[in-house]
Amino acid sequence: MQETFQLRLSQTGFILGPIVFVFIWLFFPHNSIHADAYKVLAIASLMIIWWLTEALPLPVTALLPLVLFPATGVMSMSDASLSFGNSVIFLFLGGFMIAIAMERHGLHERLAYKIIHITGTSSNGIILGFLIATAFISMWISNTATALMMLPIAHSVIEISKTKEKPQLNKDDKNFALSLMLVIGYAASIGGMATIIGTPPNVVFVGLYEKFYHQKINFLQWMKIAFPATIFISALFYFLITKVMYRVKNQARQSSSNFIHEKLLLLGPLQKTEKIVLAIFGLTSFLWITQQPLNNLFGSNILNDTNIAIGGAILYFIIPVNFKKFEFVLHWQDTAKLPWGILLLFGGGLCLASGLEKTGIVQFIGNYVLSQNLSLDVLMIALIIITVMLSEIMSNVALVQVLIPVVFGIAGNDSHTALMMGIPVTLAASVGFMFPMATPPNAIVFGSGYIPIRKMVSVGFWLDVICIAIVYLVTKLTLPFIIS
Image (cartoon, rainbow, N blue to C red; front, side, top):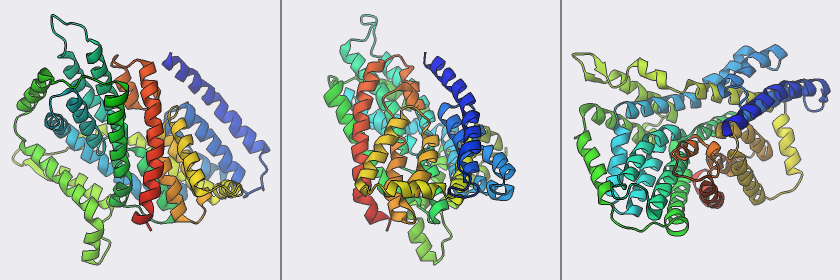
């Protein structure tokens, strides 16, 4: 049913996009804002409709400005292609390579088992362990990959509750299974909020903010705002799922504990390659967090998020694991796993934003909203709610690429206001917990068969409400002290 709906939606969008493009091109007043405004608005409408309906693969739609902007005279090919070489894209490229090194050598799996082992053998302890492990790993690798990795672990933990005498799960075990699966699906998205490289919307926002305001948000600044939000959301979600909605008897699950312990024994001690991966990951994280004090010490801005990420990635290719066999932590063939399409999607979004800004469309929308005399708090809350609602039905990356230029138009030249509205919108784009189609992790855990749709909707609704409140409060209370 879901696949049929998406097919019809894509077919409708595929036809509707060009129709709207032609309509705007012919009938939008050609000199109302800027001489080229109608051209950019027509192209933007086509891209947004195709993004929202996924009529074409998102990265393919993102390539349209490279063809249409030069063809229509909006900007030259050299200017249009600059967006695809933005430094933030290379930050994410480096982050992807670091994540691939962790996945290739199983370090992320070892971390997951270790965290779950530490949190205890009780039902709630195991749920907490999965929550912490999933959220932490998702801070560094994609939420989809995290959910896919954690799913079979959780499935094994659930299945060992069955015995010959009890082949079916009882009510308490069903609640335990439901909670475990929801924790994986939701924590994979919640954890990604915490770091710039944790999820694509964060990278998109940082890139757009730099393009519009010529200022950078570094790795530590982002974490100071987003990490507390991640902690509070995770804590309240844990309380909601274990104490309010689907309480489980907090009994010891020795069989689950034995399973985790056996897995750790099977993995054995840290291998040489894992130690190298962990050391480089630790060095990269350390430099991300301490770059500003180090730059002050050196008297020059020699370190930034991008060159740290790329430097860390390069180390995986040049530090040998076995020099005699000329083997390294990563080989170029490993980059076949890189989501190159995401990088193109970033470039296309940045290019479209440049066109919207150049022709004054963003400023026009901003001036209109400002004329309504709404307070900043009302705007923040309204934007967060709208973003959360839209994130339930559309790609969070496309959502940020559409909304953030509008937010910057409302903020005008005030970079602080742009952050006060833009950061909560970006964080809210990772919130979408009611439906399986909202995020890939939701779909992955829903496919396990342990989550009835009505229960995902009910838990997801209340978690959405929690996220709206926390994202607003954390941004409001922390951002003025972190970014002046």
